[in-house]
View 1: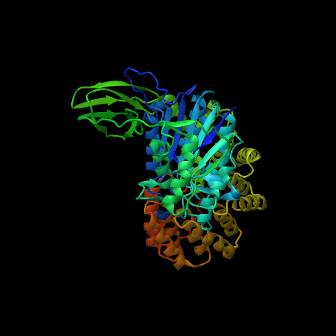
View 2: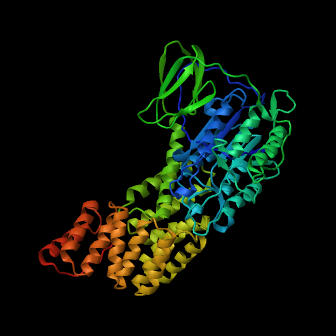
View 3: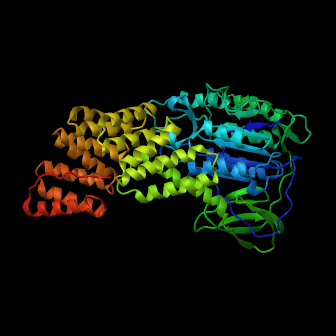
Length: 606
């Protein structure tokens, strides 16, 4: 019988590296028929969430859990058997590469697999559950979050291991940036996780569906992980046989977490499991020494010494491990190799190479996701052809490496459609985007892009229908509202357009593109004073945002300030010397400086 344990609470991002010294035999402390593997993710810091939604300890919880697995008590897993992704390394692309490619590729039928996630888990669009990666955007989690559905697809259908243990500490409170989001959305995530998998999918979850997970300095992390590690390190060994079993851990958590939180948080268990399954042993204490080891190598490599996680390498900085005794130590990296090294000097230096094949998959995932995340954020301007070409090529290569993953082709078709729009091939773009929507009708990004293509083909009614559908699918995403506003503005319905622009800015005030659209709306409505203030605020927000200077120039020109407009146009040209309208703007600027007159140009941007 095949068992799947879902322990979602920590996933920590680090990359694989190879160590070139004598390898020692793999340990089998827990007496498994096969071996054990772990994907550990912890996300405290998020690119697209407000300060109030950032967590403090999720990344640390991940590192602590991963480190424990490498100790004798945790099973003495080799370092290359533990993939850790934290904070800026826990991007959606990195997590997908580890979950969908690395883990199914290494786990064999007799192996045990851990999946541990610590961070935000929410129920968002259409009541679908998501883990929130470092670069996830709350406007559109369908396109930028790790859905519970894709986690289930891999763990239940593609994983060959006999047992998957998934632990989730993914129900933290706090506003994530949605105008309509409430803390109840975090609690619902636990209910969604309970439904994952079949009867052989066991989950240990940090809280009930109606509750939230807590972290605090008193636990130096999340209370769930604090209690979990306390139990695994011996606190749960009630019968004193020096083996911590599944049933003992569950009993320990069910008592310790409520006791620590005044019964506000109660862990849950779902699925079927062997109560006697060994999860840990109770080892002795390590002995410290006086020598040091310095490790150098590629950025992001996780380093372990004597099965203890010691930190990650950073570009231009060596990782120093102090307090080591003279003699032989087991040193490893999370790239695929571990070995034995003999220390007999005050400071020893080691250099680690890059594990290229595994790194390549993560690079492909990241490049492909960049096309989607860029579209959701819609905060950058200017030519994007290079980004789009790279995304299409990356997803093509990734699809060859993982042909069973249909979502890759869906994303490739979307990025191809964007590229075709950027190169004025609107009929081809329509075909690519409709193909993407055939594969995933809920893909709001493809809906919105299809609306853009149809609009460029002069099919305004059809375009509006696609924009409206995109807005319906992702009610917290501002871009479809801006597209509708642009369409109304082009049709002379200025008042209606302003309403859409104002709603978009209120929904996503940090978006420069939304604010630029609102400035255009004010100017079209003859509200040049409000347009000027809006353009000046936009430039103050981001002096390097070229469209902000362009909108100010056009507004000043509308107010009759020819020299002021010329100065703003020049600032735009400094930032955007090679845009499609740059030559037109140069000519316009020259005329304004010499004559102080002329009508505002019509500016087209791909």
